[in-house]
Image (cartoon, rainbow, N blue to C red; front, side):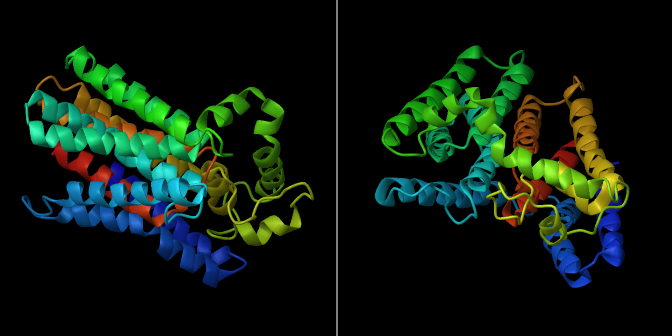
Length: 336
């Protein structure tokens, strides 16, 4: 079902090129987004025993991203974004990796692998600290949601002390990030306090979403063509909108606008297929504890990014799509 859903979704995106007002731009975006199914199917077709160091490689690269962002804040007072377009997509990449790293930290503690536990514990601190340092409210809430999901699913299968260690690392990372950005605009506590101001919270994105809805109503079923948002958005953009106009900051709404309700439904079908596969595995009593924890971490990472993308454009970032493809394929592999 997962493979079928992915194929149908990308087939529909390819078809949307035919009615796009700018076919060359739509083709470019289709090729850009096709990195997700490519990574998914390449990993699924690999032979057993190959690519053993892929997870640690992804973690190391993500830590490099995190350290670059930390350096930007420490030494230049910039809002940390590393090599990404915005701090939000930078934080989303970290959120994708943090939950699987959390479960592997727990696994290493259970197996009493001291060296690996220390490395993963330090990696968790760096990832958590880098996320809070961005002061991205959506990323912070998504990270907490992913860790809560891990706690909820794993509480019956692991000792509470192991989860307690994770949350101690989380709290220390939050306090350090809050102290480091105390006198900066991107202070995490200050940004989270702004959530109480609903008018300020939805000023920018609310204006964008309202304008985009006018476009969706003109072609609700098939959309305007993949990658055409920034073209059609100019006609309805409101004067008070100070965004770049390249992304809608809500991928579900943007996919609806570009690929129609059919495309949005197929995107949701992919998520449902991943969720159903994971739930079926987690209900299997014969599933090994290590596999159970790994699946929980992978699903929590995917869920964190899926939640965050309600207010951002994470599904248009190649690095995130690549890792998501590998993670979905890994869940499929465990089910086999």
